[in-house]
Image (cartoon, rainbow, N blue to C red; front, top):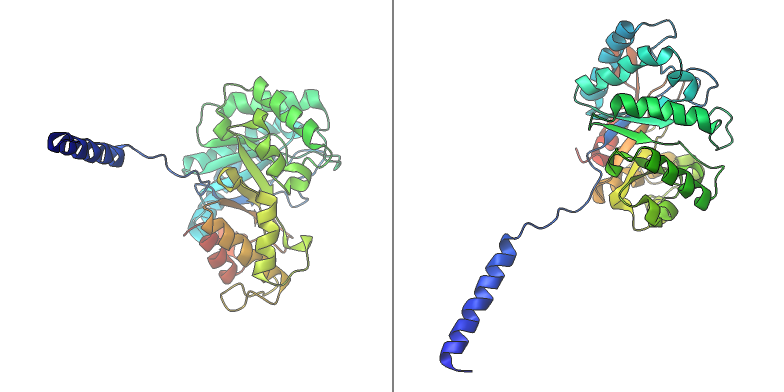
Length: 326
């Protein structure tokens, strides 16, 4: 190689190196934008009737729901730092006059700059859609009302344990086709079983581009170390952490447990909660705590206080915020 050629070759390498440095590199996918809580019905959300989250009543008008929700949503933000609320729906609620009033809860959250996840709960507790026709009518209505708002997300079904992987993927594929105008990045496909594993739905090409939702609870095992719980959760995630939102995870908050550092290993629930939040933080995964508010539930991280909320366990709040990356 002549001196001139060597010189030109060196210049070319330098130019190429500089150009590579200036090419925008894609950001690592993550779901940390979801720092959320579930706002749940005191009867649980598996009800054959209207779902009515704690603090609301069946006789509330839209304006009353909106006013009550303003206090509760503000409480989630101020007491916890939440930016997402997951709300239950079912055909009984949406295909009735309750829907026009219940929307006050979602509208309040959106007005406060929150994200909203609408998730379907069935009534028969068999892990199957109760009535596909009514389910479709419900989702047509909900998506029709909120598809245009980019802060609203849709979860076709909560805990589809009645379906095999193939039948669940097929049902979700049909849902996606019916609502093809909604970006897939605003759809949360539940993991199989009790939302307890996302490896199957994550690998399904028919569901490419969707988010995935996982549930994870401390009563599912008896381990008392963070390392054991970390392994447990990692196996349920496989290689799909970047698409997954843990949209249910919770631990007793009214029984006096100490979730602070130094008090985590040695107890099932403190070890579980530490492992879950540590892994969520390290993998930049969103967490939607169960429940943010639900009367009579020892896992509820807040309680009603006047028109707002108070927290039930300061160390639990700190650990949750740690998991959120705060």
